[in-house]
Length: 230
Image (cartoon, rainbow, N blue to C red):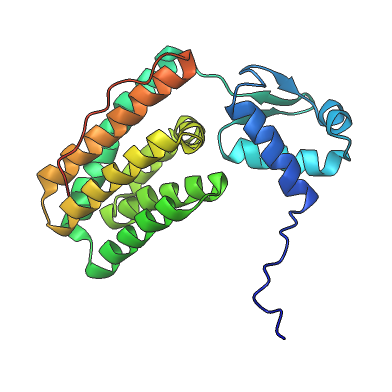
C-alpha cells in the first residue's frame, strides 16, 4: 500500500514563526504604532534567541511595518493623516501614468503574466506572498511603462505603499475588492483602452486610500467605488 498521498505536516523555521507572530500583532493592533521594539525584550517575551528576532525586524522593515533605528531597535511605523494623504495624491497620478504608458507598450506575454499574477493573488492564503504578488503586479506595469524617472518617483512612496498593502492583506473583504479592481485594470489594458485602464487604476488607488483611512482610524468600512464589470 502506497503512502505517497499522505500530506506532510508543515513545519516552519523558527525565524518565520517569529516574523509572522510579530507581523500579525502589528497589523491587528496588538502592538500600537510608535511602539519601540528591542531584540532583547522581544526575544525574552517569545522565549527565543535574538537572531530570529533580528531577522524578523529586517523583513518587517522591508515591508514598511517598522523602522529600524541604529542602536535603539525598531519602531512600529506610524504615519500622520497628512503623510498618507500626500502619498496617495502622488500615487494616484503616478500609477495612472504608469498604466497609460504600459497599455501603449505591453505585449501579449506581459498581459498573460498580469492575468496569472491576479489569479495567484486570489488563490494564495499566505499574507506575505499575497503582498509580494500584488507588488509584482504593479512592478510589471512599471516595467512595461519603461520610464526610469517614474519608477524612481514611485519608489519614494514605498514605505507607505508596502505598509498599506500589508494592512489590506488581512481583510478578506478588501482582498476580494482588490481582485476585481485588478481584473478591471488588466482587462482594459488587454483591450488597449488607455482611458479605461487609467480610470480603473484611479478607482483602485482611491479605494485603497479610503480603506486605509478607515482601517487606521477604526471607522466603519467606507463605500467602495465599483468598477464596471469585466
